[in-house]
Structure formats: structure tokens, C-alpha cells
Length: 457
Image 1: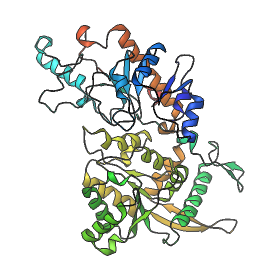
Image 2 (image 1 turned 60 degrees about the vertical axis):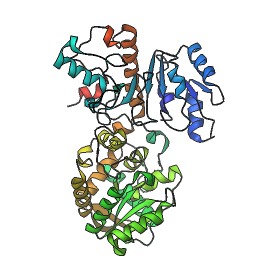
Image 3 (image 1 turned 30 degrees about the vertical axis):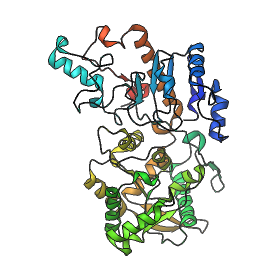
Image 4 (image 1 turned 90 degrees about the vertical axis):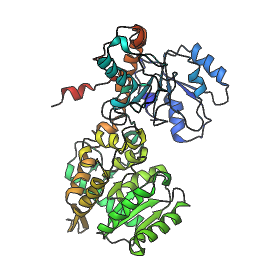
């Protein structure tokens, strides 16, 4: 989200960025330092100093980008230095504290049915206003009661398209002049067939660089997540797919390197050496190389227990389709892939409802892939792909310049609408539902709408 800080409307919002970790001197940190309106390095400050600074700066809305992760400073939020406090991105789940009012998400990753304020409303309707006892938070049920009805004590700012923001369009382009056609690779006015032809050539060339000894017709399944996201059930599922698509490999990363020998041993024990030898590992690459070589994969197989997050956006930017399974209603990290896939506009072709569909979809897409070879007018041999998988890939690639998933300025402006509404509810007292006239027929969450979506057919 490195560009978000600079994309805010400075005529309406004054943005302060408090850095709680020392600079790593990366280009990403430098960009944020350069573009944020106010950047304050507080990594060496005490919690008290930071709290007092936030109060003195007159902050209205404070965003927690860490949650329960390494280096977090949640004590600052527990001190309630400002009226409205939100959680976003760093931690995929509830913070379960009265010091977090809102989570910025979308209804796919965090369905309304498991939000405490929405469950509270359902009970209000069923039992009547005078038969409700509340918990520790306004307009909420008791977070310690014996029930599985809800997960999130926070309310939600529901973003359109996807809550997941990325910076691929700004930071990971590979534009270059096309000598044969005098066009820029991402010129929106260029002929789609020309752009796709160039991309196919780049894919073929890079495939030979990454896998120089791999036959051209082998299907490459891939997953680039850290290996802790892979549990035995999913690995068995992937091995079954390899068994049923004999002309395929599974491309994983040594992430960490120690995982390779254990997975190879399990594969050999479970399905035998013939299939196990088709599980291939490569080293982790620098970010820009990692994103560009994602185009080499044919299908990205997501991990259902904990989905690809940034990696899913990386792989879709390259045009590679994913197969993802939002396995649990209550587990945000298992639903992120579905959120990201939906924002491309082609989610129905990549999201499945269970493991059987997952296996069937992966096999069906792989078996649809066909190639022909043509000689160009310049006498160059070119490979051309066909079939359902290649058609989906072409649509993902050619639409990415206008895709909602990669439109960071649009995402930022939609987020600002959520901020405005959250602040309004605090000012008017609507947020304090126990003390105000609550409309129980209205959602307690904020649903941000995109005007272009409203005007679309």
C-alpha cells in the first residue's frame, strides 16, 4: 500500500504516518517517507510519547496497520488517543478489544453474519428491545457468552470490490517499446491482439529461462506462499491433481529451504517417486523478479487454510489464473483469495466451494490448455495457447489496466468515504447504539459504494 499515503485527497484529509519500526532503507519505505504528508519516525519513542504526540496532532481517525504481529504497538490504541480507531491489513482477524472500533474489510473476507453488531440486531428483532442484555461494547452482545454466533467484536467498513490494496500498477510495470509495432506494451489504445501476442512471447521466453529443460506442453501448477500455509490435506490434494494431470509439474518455493526435503519425502511416501519427482522447487526471488516470473505458471493453486494475500495479487497481475477455496466463514485469512479474485471481475471462474470442486476445476483448466506453433512474418517461431485456461488468462491480462483490483487511487478515494462516515457516526452519536435511537433494520456496518459501479449496467 506504499502509494496510498500519497493518493489521499490533501484538500480534505491531513495524513500523519507514525512509523513504529526503524527504516530498512527499502525503496518502499523511502516512497512512503517521501509521499506521506507528515511522516514521523517514532520507532525509538515510548508509548507515552507517541500517545501524547497523537493527541497534540489532533488526530480524528487512527489506523492500526499491525494488529497482533511482530513490532505492533497496540498499547497505543488501548490508551484511546483519538475518537475513532480502525484495524487494517496487518492482522487478518479480530483484535477483540474495545479499543478497536472498525475493521476495514469487505463482505467476502468478513461476512456480516459473523459480526457481533449484526447478530445483536437479529436478536433485537427476535426478542424485542426490552429483552436484550448487552456486553462490554455499545450495541454488542457479550463477547464472553457461550455462543459461536459471531467472531468479530468490531464493526466493519466494507469496501467495494476488495479490501485488499496493492501497488502493482504504480510499482511493478515492465513497459518497453515494441520495436516491431512502435507501441508501448501497456498503451490502452494499442490493439489487444498485439499486446497479447507480445505477452505470449515474453511468457515463452521466461519459461525457458526458469525451466530450460521442461517440454513446452507441460502444465505448470504453482504456489509461491510460505510453506507454513501448506498443511497435509492441501498437499495431498495437490498430489492428486498431479496424478490426474500426468503432463504437469507443481512449482513451489524454498520458503523456507528446510521445507523442501520434508515435502519431497511426504510426496514420495504418499504417491510414489513418479509423481513426487514432479514437485519442483526454486529459490525465492527479489520482489520485482518474483512478480514478473509469475507469468511462467499456468495455474496458481491457493492454500485453503491460509490463502495467498499479496502473492495472490502478484500472480493475478501477471495474468495467471488462481484456484481458491474460501474454506471457513469465520477465518478471514482463508477468504482473502476469493476477495482478490472477485475484484478482477472473473471470480466465478476461479473460486470454488469445496475440495472436490477445487480438484475438478484445476484438472479441467489444465486439460483445456492446447498449443500451436506459428511462424511470424519475420520468420520467428511463435507459440500460441488456446482453451478455457488460456482464454481466462488473456482476459485477466488485458483487463488489468482497468481492473478494480489494481486501481489504487480509486481504492483510496473509496476508503476516504468510509472514514467520513465513521467520523460522522461518532460526531452524531450514531456509533453509540445503546445511547441512540438505533434502526435495527439498518446494518451497523458501513457499506462503501463506488459511484461507477452504481452507474454500470
